Image (cartoon, rainbow, N blue to C red):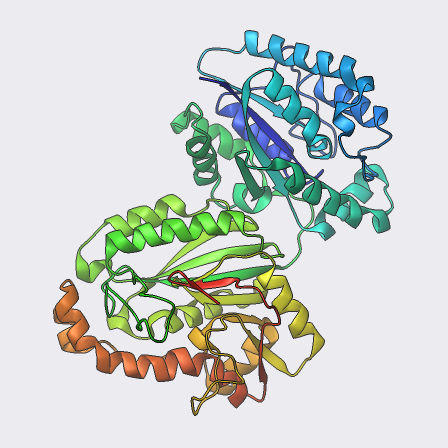
Length: 495
């Protein structure tokens, strides 16, 4: 079995130090001669090995680059003979570190610069027959820029290209290597234990999370570690772990490309959400965001406990652009369904987020940059209130008497939501409860489905249709997202 090495890289001032410090508490070993280095900008310390800063700066200098001014390098620069001595140096340091690693620990190399010279390190790990596990730490450009200007007196006009270089260069060379993309501060300041548990489980590292280390981590993490804050964005995914209309197909082969499996009940929904979240961990929406998974909590009626246990475990785990946050909404006899859940999150968090993306759990965004494209369109025309994100039925071909975005999926701005809320008293949802027969058969899928159709007709009209049609009623326009690729999938069918 290959020996693992955990590599923490990414943007400067994005949280690599606090992440490395937390993992050190959990058994991360930073190598021979490690001594804590701290200053006024990193009061807790930088948590880097004794050789990484000097050696990585030397590599950058050899190829004509500085960490603060990244430039494109020639193809195969990392194979140039002038780097042979540096390869030997790095390999020698790593071998010495691995020979001295304490029992039960895991080896860790941390330096943001690694993402600028990633192919060099990949070659080192291949030559040493090591199994690298990567973490790329990221953060909003504006926050990192303010921090770097303050610490290093850099020109802010040059920094956006530096940040993008880190991202693009890493994506270019990471290939099929095992990597976690993370907005470290979003995760570490929300649910640090769940975030760290996810890293340890994902990379199969020794697990030293216990009462003692939890306390140390809690004392180590300080909200003041994050010196700059900007208003963020949010993606809201509604879910429900009870029975749904059918567990076999929704629609038919004449209207869809094939039979579409529909998840229903606890086990199927857990499996589906796990797959959905893996998608969230790799697809880049184009903006940093929290992903709120809002559960219309039926567990008190169904008397099951697995769904809440599952949600507790995923709460605070990372996505490609931020962190998963779980909200359990009271069931209230079924009132509102998923669109009631959308309203619940809006009312609770309308002061916290700027741009909002709404989707039911059965509509999955599988390609990059869907959110940023929606934001660009919203900013092009102030009269547009909502960008439709699911193109099974375009607005032009929408024959419904109430024009709407199919499935209610899409993006908007908080100012537009506030306008709808002021006009209607809330975001639109179906305010009728489940019928008595639905509630009586809540645990019987077949019986529940046979009694559910009438309620679902109202839910579709007032919820699925009404949710986005209410923007038109408030004097705003709907607009389809302007892209040609199949970026959005509905139970496996992509549009």
